Figure 1 (tube, rainbow, N blue to C red):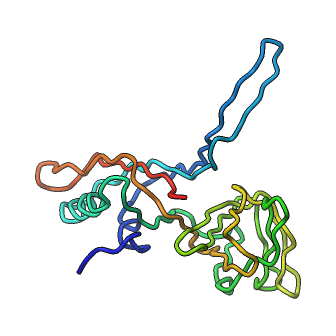
Figure 2 (cartoon, rainbow, N blue to C red):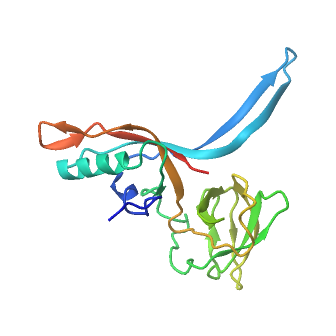
Length: 211
């Protein structure tokens, strides 16, 4: 059966087992300054999420499988859906009843959104991640910068998010809170080595978000 891209959740990302995920929002800013201490900056491109994962040693069969699936991406030309397997979901610990959450409002500068469809009393926490599929294959991935609680109606008024919401995301779009993910490209890969024929080791992978 022919491969389909992006790879679906669970095809490759679940195999990338690691102890530490240093997920960071990488900015593309140009800065300049003057001798009197004044500084200027300009954003050259929207920020993108990226991470480098040092992978656990594993049995030879799985090591070869992971190597092959990464090679199937043809460098950076193809993508896969990636979620942080160490992320447990919202900090409140609530992962049931939040499968139909939607965007209820978008602030004019697109730096904050309101939410609807939450369980009554749900606690949103600064640092919770979210993703939103939009525009025929694009996926927004972001993080709440401030928290809030839903009332009896299941709504939370506009809360700050970063990065800013792209224009392709409309009011009414579904928000993924339990297993937020984004479309990723592999920028660097150290494959598993055959260590004395017993297991693969010393593998690492660097990914960057595909906007």
